[in-house]
Amino acid sequence: MGFQTEFNSVCKFKSDRELYELLEYGRGKMVKKQFRVFPTGQKVIAYAPDNRAVAIVRIVASIAEINFAGEEVTEVEMELIRKLTEEESRVQTALAHEMFFGDQQ
Image (cartoon, rainbow, N blue to C red; front, side):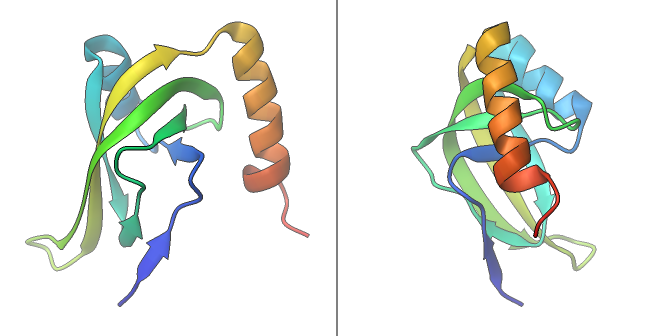
């Protein structure tokens, strides 16, 4: 058991439904496996499940716990600051692919 630190510029969704709720209602949450540390109060780039940059969000809360099934999970609550423009999304997506999501050498 241990905490895994997320790099502080990325909040990647694994579920289209969780991302939809954030973009539609301006607030949302996502659930990650394992214990993770997200920077509460910080603005980060949100990425869709296909690794495409979509928005700037603020992390409101990060709660790590063991659920009823005995699994380590972290719930991250966030609020939408704004959606990215097409150009911003293209640039951020390319940078994230090179820095985080691409092949690690």
